[in-house]
Amino acid sequence: MTNCIFCKIIAGDIPSIKIYEDEYCYAFMDVMPLSKGHTLLVPKTHREFVYDLSADEAANLFSAAPKIAAALNEAFEPEGMNLLNNNGAKAGQSVGHFHLHFIPRYGAGDGFGAKWMTKEKEFTTERLQELAGQITVK
View (cartoon, rainbow, N blue to C red):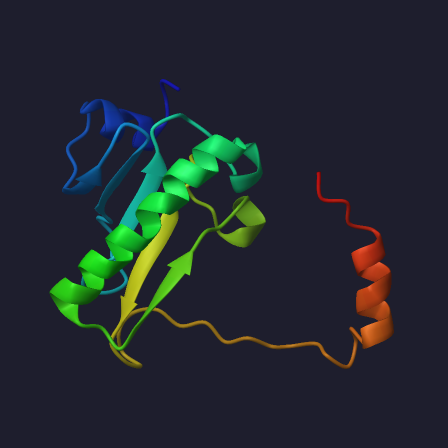
């Protein structure tokens, strides 16, 4: 896609700091990092959302994920690591090309914070069963 910044990075039209590449995917340092080692993994084929990936594309991409996570873990020894993908503007996606964030965690001041507000009182076991009945995995 001609106007996609990540496609331009993959093509070499925009510089990046590459940490991994194979025939299917490309991983590079995020230029707006939340923490030391913040890395993005993208498929080389332009796909906007996770549900746009074919099974083979997803398998190729996600088979690289443990390699990248292990390399970040070895290099920086974080206390933990978040892997994050946002799908759609309402979920915080800012670039319309699927990307998986690897965010090493070092403590409260590391630039990333997520507070979960669970709704177990609203989503009872019965309600979860009802919702599960609406889902068909193909």
